[in-house]
Image 1 (cartoon, rainbow, N blue to C red):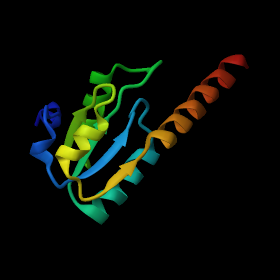
Image 2 (image 1 turned 90 degrees about the vertical axis):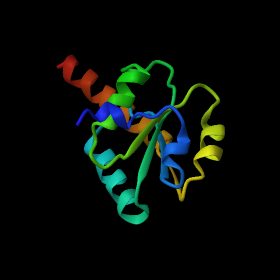
Image 3 (image 1 turned 180 degrees about the vertical axis):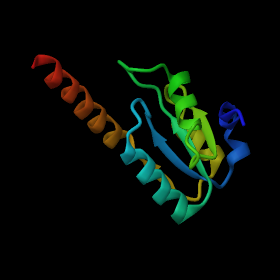
Image 4 (image 1 turned 90 degrees about the horizontal axis):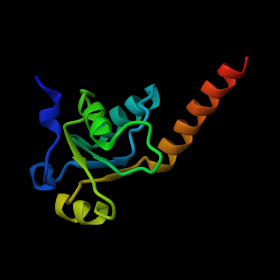
Length: 119
């Protein structure tokens, strides 16, 4: 299966799924654990990939990477300022917000790489 087929243009296809909002710029084991918990608790997952300044990967690449995870059922790439409208159309069973944790863990990885290069 081409997992890019999980990337959908409109949230109506995933109506009622749990919305998982994040940047997905760097995927780490933590993401998989969080997503698995959300899926176990709420069922179908729709990952909403948010725009990010100074991203490591393009939003298209981040959406494709999120789609490659078996635990995610749908992926929606949100444009700037579109999140609230997407959530209103999705009518999610639950909303899981990962943005702050995504940025923190991304920063930790960048710091780790910088420390290794200094040695």
